[in-house]
Length: 362
Image (cartoon, rainbow, N blue to C red; front, side, top):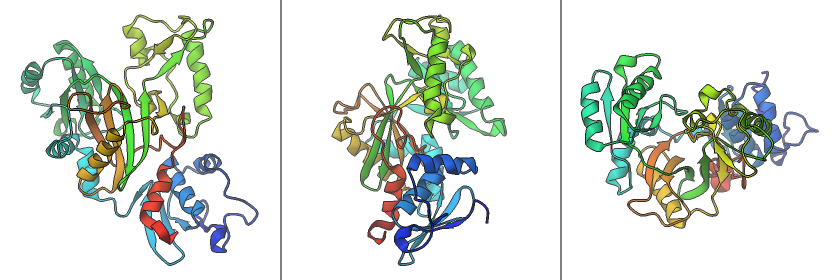
């Protein structure tokens, strides 16, 4: 069957790919699977199941069937199992609908509204009503495509308007965008499974730290060498083209600039890991009330039993109140950024999902 082979862990008195092979580390397993075109989320779910003594049948590069000794079986697409509903996915993708639900549950969300391509004048009136700065984003695209943050002028707004609709590529005129008030803070991704907080990650904007002798470009190249050795970050390197480093250009910093020793240089405005940001584990230091808010957020969205949610907050180590955080969005199938942090302790997202489905039957 090629790469789509039936695997069992030795705990089940059966064979793995090779009788003489051990399962190995999660990192090595992920690298090996990637060579066969299998994505990171799917390989991590497979690894977690095998590690827990469960049989795994790979049906495709993205789909596996996991079977316990007693015959209980569940299928998974990436890290989402068969109890993850289409309705839940739809609500998460529709950011405006998710915020409406969260607001009804007493969670703090940013003021926002949605507009179609022909609604530019209405949108301008709305912007005038909520005031600058604002954020413009597509309502159902991932990886921060089409997003512009901290917009300060109507000229900047019109440019962001075009960028957001262009990000759809197809059916531009039938899609909508979200306009929201800009909220200043850092970006944090929390991952919840059932009633448990599994991880909290600071998604820090792409950056380098000066050593007193290296240029910004040299520092980027050096950091990318580190990132290339990380199974998650290897596909999310920092751009080396000045045209993609908007935080540099906004501050009139060139790639040949030599920062002082210890000087932090922010490279891009976006905090997403795919844009070159750092995933820094803050699970142990996040305030307990933020952890409880994260659990409440996931449990508020019908049709999902686990997922990721994003806080924008100045600091998640302090107690949240009505004005020092917002729930930015809920992610149905978030990236496994906590498995391979740039800084901090690894957190087993996939293992928590397998435990959620199989519990004591492992």
